[in-house]
Image 1: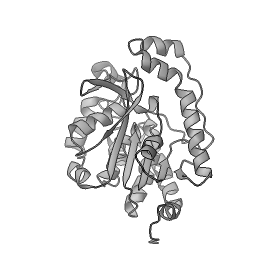
Image 2: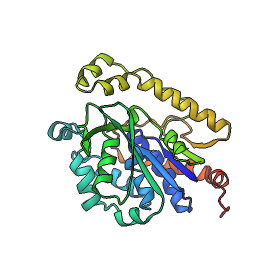
Image 3: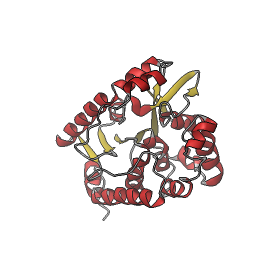
Length: 285
């Protein structure tokens, strides 16, 4: 089985959107896809086969205070407004094609961090309905600036806290040929975050999350090193930005979003035949 793993990274995810749109335009499909954080919220459009949707609505609504703003954090408890981002936008403003999402046979998995255990948990999407959407929200809910998301009696936050890239899960599920889309260039290493003591204080109600955040940079660097080692051995195929994208996690400038999206499209086109060969697809060029 062929699997696709999508890293998060908030608005660095525009790079991923560019790659995925090239995949869709050229008929590149996988048996399964897993996303973390932005990899889930933007990657769902790959299963619903909505080319251009993610870049379109981010450019149109990125500066709307209901989408992402200090105003939203103060008034709703979420930097990215939950009702606007996960109800109004997909149901009224830029419709998420739930019917096509459900019809597409590709499996779609979402990872989020269980607050009680501090471990990653995965959900297999079914119909793109309310529960699937809540898992998307949970996966992208950054600590401190988001409320924990309650699903089936458990609380969840950003999946990237403990597993930035869902490749291990895809391998455990039996996917043998795996393509990974990263949002940081090769050689990037996360540094120990500043304000560790303040973060621990703000997360004191959730000690497992506080501990996971303390170790996050170590876990991330270890995972990324393992991914590139596998890529060098030809065990997986990695698509990553050629250099740092130079975009903030909460970027709302349409020109900057488009710039990063186009970098993704360029890399997607550049690696298209490599992906086809790796997956054993017929060359259609």
